[in-house]
Length: 44
Image 1 (tube, rainbow, N blue to C red):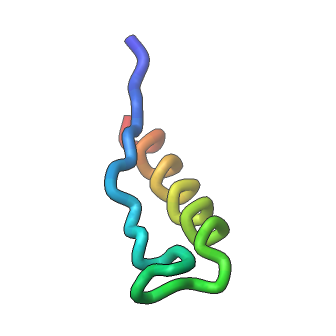
Image 2 (cartoon, one colour):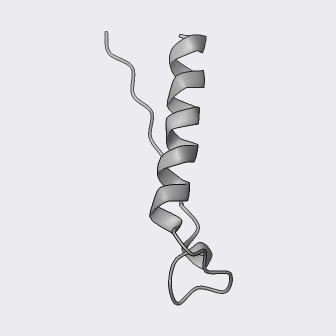
């Protein structure tokens, strides 16, 4: 059996045109998803 991590509803407010745009939203998302993947893998 394979496991899957599904990310839903990434906040558009942090991307260009949103209410709270970040300077580099793609980088922020990648960093957070990398952290999340590590935690999920560790948890099994």
